[in-house]
Amino acid sequence: MTSFDRKSHWEQVYSDKSHLEVSWHQNDPALSLQMIENTGIGKDAAILDVGGGASVLVDHLHTLGYSRLAVLDISAKSLAVAQQRLGDSAKDIEWYEADITGFRPAHEFSLWHDRAVFHFLTEAPDREKYVATLKSALSPDGHVILAAFAIGGPTQCSGLDIVQYDSTRLLEALGDEFRLVEELSETHITPAGKQQKFSYFRLARRATG
Image 1 (cartoon, rainbow, N blue to C red):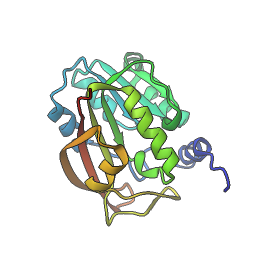
Image 2: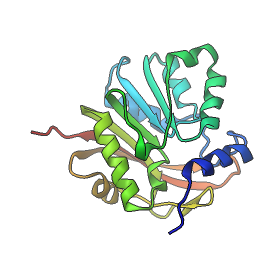
Image 3: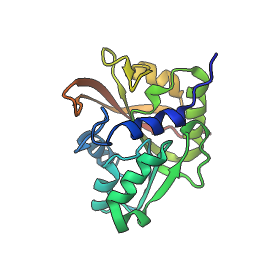
């Protein structure tokens, strides 16, 4: 099997296109913000946006007064876009340039947000590494918000195959440590005007022991 260099791929994507042209770009991450509010976490809760890169979600959360924000992305170029856009406010945020399958969190997070990262992990070992990272990073009473291409949605993105998810398939991948709390659907309109069917899942970590 040929080794795939994820980092090189995503750095190239952000070299070839403006962050405003990539298919997942949103001006208003409304469903993510709604679900974050629905968790009821405090403004001082630690939040990690996985694959956040150039996303404006962190801008909205910062403006709303969330004070412990972190953004992780495999692409340095995408992180630089967000840091430049935020200006002086960027110093208030933790920035991690890392592949999520190998990330080692320095502290726990109360909320893990992922819009369109997990569905790129088409190999079981990578999904298992993701889930292990999630479990090590999330607080015992933490929340997960995960958005992925829905059943019947796209089968590829940025030249890569993806895995479509419904709640059954997602819970099977994450394991019985998580319970589904909320599920919403979205038809995302890309900057090129195409439709993409997304499913958003909000999960809570079950108490163990």
